[in-house]
Length: 435
Image (cartoon, rainbow, N blue to C red; front, side, top):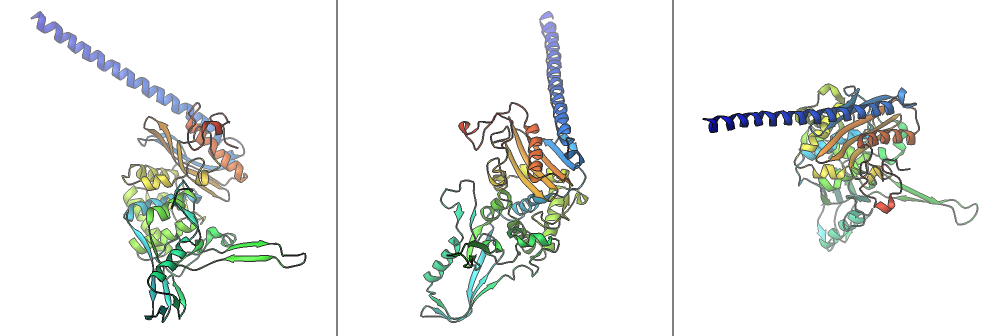
C-alpha cells in the first residue's frame, strides 16, 4: 500500500506546487506588464500635457495585438482626422473589390476603319482609373516596371492603335467621363484648396491627376516675357490591377485624387452610382457591418480627408486597423502604409527606435495632425494606435514633432534601430528624433 499511496500523494503535491508556480509566474508577468503600462501612460500624459499642446484637443487610443487597451484619452470622441480618413476607403476597397479587379479604360471608334483612317470619332471611355500619369507603385523606385512616366501609358495606347491599323482619325478625339456623376468638385472643399493639385476634379476619365503642370523660366533677354509651359490632358485604354494602381499611391503618398476616384468607383461598383454619396454609403455600410464600428462614431464626407466635416473617433480607427491586421488578404494594405524613410514618413522617425518597426498613415490639415498604424514590439507583439490633435495653433513642424515624440514613447527606450537606413547612416542615438 505504501508504494501505491506515497507516490500518489507526491504526485498530487507536485501538481499543486507546479500549478502554484505557474500562477505566480503569470501573476508576475501581469504585474510587470501593468507596471510597464503605467510607466508608458505617465510618459504619454506628460507629452500630451506639454505646452503649447496642452490646449489642443487630443484623441488617443493604443491597444496591444490582442485588442486590449494600453492607453487612451478621449478615445470615443470624434475628431477631424485629416488624411487618416484614407484608411477607411482603402480598407473598404481591399475587402469589397476582388483581388483581381481591374479598371479598364476603353477606346471606341464611331465609324469604319478605311486604309488606316478611322472615319469618325475616337472615343476614350474612362471607368475611374487614376493611374494615367507619373506614379510609382512600390518602394523600390529604380526597379523595372515600378514607376511610370507621364506619357508611358499614352504611348502604349498609341502603339496599340497603330497595331490595329489606326494611323489617322478623321473625326474628333472625344473623352467620355460619364462613368461617374457630373459633380467634379466636392462642395465642402474650401476655395483655397481648389487652386492646388490635391483638390483636382474627380471624373470618370482623368490624366496627370486631372491637373495641369505649369513651368516657367525667364525670357531670352531683359524685358522679354517669361516662357510658360503647360502640360497636358488626354487619356486612353489600359487595364491595371487595383492593388498596385490605387492602394499604394493612396496610402504611401497620401494621394487625395486617388482616394476620391476610389470613393466614386466603390459607389459605381458596389452602390447606387459613381458619386460621393454613393461611395460613402458603401464605406459606411462596410465600417458598420463588416468592421463593427458604432455608426455614431464617425461621419465621413469625402475619401481623402480634405473636407473638414469628416469626423471619426480614435476607437473607430483602431477597430479598423485591428480588422485589417486580421484580414487574410491584407498584404497590399500593409505594404502601402508608409514606414520611416518612405512616402509621407520619408523625413520622419528615420534612425530612431521606430525605424523599421512602424507602419502608419499620416494626416495633416489646418490645426490638425494625426498618425494611425502599427508599431512592432517584437516577439509577435504590436501596438495598434490612433493619435490625433485638433484645434492646435502650433507650426506644422512642431505638430509633427509632437506626434513623433508620442510614437517614440510607445517604442520605448533602448529599442533597436533597424530599417531603411544602414548603421553607418544613423549617427543619431536610438530614440532621438530625426532632424
